[in-house]
Image 1 (tube, rainbow, N blue to C red):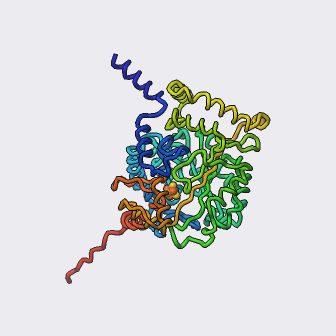
Image 2: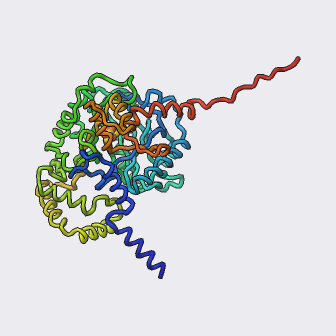
Amino acid sequence: MKRIRDTLRRIELATRPVNPEVATALERVWNELPDHAQVANQTMGRHTTACEGTHGVFPKCDFGCTPCYHSKEANLVRIDGDHTVREVDRQMAYMRKRRGPGQYAQLIGGEVSLLTPEDHARALQAMVGHERKPMSFTHGDFDYEYLRALAVDDNDEPRFKHLSFAGHFDTTMVGRRGIKRAETERELNPFRERFCEMFNRLESEYGITHYLAHNMTVTGSNIEQIPDVIRECRQMGWRLFSHQPAAFIGNPTRWQDDFRELTNERVWEQIEMAAGVRLPYKAIQVGDERCNRSVWGFYAGDRYVPLLDDQHPGDMKARDGFFKSVGGMDFYAPASLVALRIARAALSNPSVVVPTASWGVRLLRRAGVRNLRRGPVNAITFALHAFMDADDVKPAWDLLQKNVMSDDPRIRTTQERLQACAYGMAHPDSDLIVPACVQHSALDPLEIASLREELPLRPRQPKRRLDLVSS
Ligand code: SF4
């Protein structure tokens, strides 16, 4: 009898639209958001607890990017797989406790492919062990053999069903094999394609699926090349095109004056030019609008179709219904389980059914039957993430630690953004999740100084004893 009861309880829990631990974490995140971010389109605290990233786990990198968000001394820390796995495990255990299961976490630091494939795999497994959905951040300059060795074990069996990678490709980077410094973004397209092809090959040989994000740092020099990058690369296999306007953060020796020319509006205009439509980023907000813009959608033929139109009241009603009924639901589960969760959500919230169905009909109309007949749709997300300058972040964070809001409008704006941060890093020792801006502006230099002691480039030799030989 007890066994039957336990089984029923397990089924009930698995088919609940939202895991109760996630629901608690969402409530906490929502309550911690400042007033200006508790708005109708806010997804933090409603559907996601926000992105997570590692820090201080493999600071070294073999490229020289301008800008580089890492500390000037990062390359003086030795890469050590055991240290990486231990720290990743510690940070992710903390995130699991604070943010519940099923959240997205970035395996990020210096260059991830400087880890051995085995250590890279162990780090990802540690993240999965804490129920994170990991994504490795890389410059993408590695070979298929590296990817294969990471993805399959010594018996040639897959270690993972699915891999997520963010590949950073742009003209701010120096050091890629075959093109040490690219003059134009177009010159990098063969390298972008080669990266995607490695994952296609892995999928065809081992059945390991993938999600690939294209990361591009935007400066005054490459901003106008964004449309060509997206148009020419959107069919390579990328699922997300993410753009980071360059900021004065990290290593000051890598800053350039043309970072000042950038605004979110200018960058977004270029992305819209590529998509060929207005990209309605106000439909769903991730954290603070001054930090993040995102639009989810798909290409039907050559037409890009955003999932939601922020100027259509019916779409906004459907979005509200989504948050209300399935906000926080994990859609990355077997299809039958997802169907049961959705059915339970619909039964508990019947008022969302009609607005959702109407939205579905509108979406099909926007895509157009002729475009839909042209072949499978290609899901693509467009995003912008604007880091802040270290000179603003440091005083803003210092004051926030003292619970003081600044009178200086610029610092106050920075504080508001930090309070609504959507990209946090775990500090278990101080029981804090710290915005990545703060990590790279204020904490990385201290952390790197201590890591240089712990992991010097050359392991210290024991001091030689000078024996006095008596004659
Ligand atoms: S890391 Fe900085 S720019 Fe990014 S969401 Fe957090 S506060 Fe905003």
